[in-house]
Image (cartoon, rainbow, N blue to C red):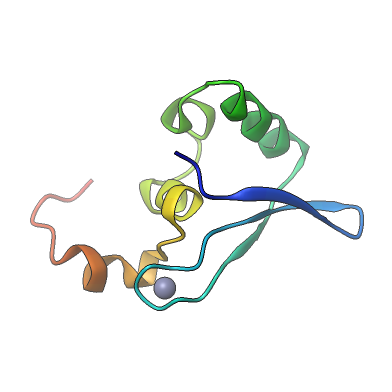
Length: 83
Ligand SMILES: [Zn+2]
């Protein structure tokens, strides 16, 4: 499930992510209209990997759980496979 929510910051849409499970800091990602449409498609059942295929694995992880790319190793442990 997606933990992130869309908010408006002024007239700019942003995605407000969950607090990072590693460091506890929430992240706000500025998005454009395209990403906003993708996010809406996801709330209608599109998979995150489909909706945000143009985002990296780490960015999609941020969207789902709030985990930062820089907290990834500490949280997940070293990963021998590269993407
Ligand atoms: Zn973090």
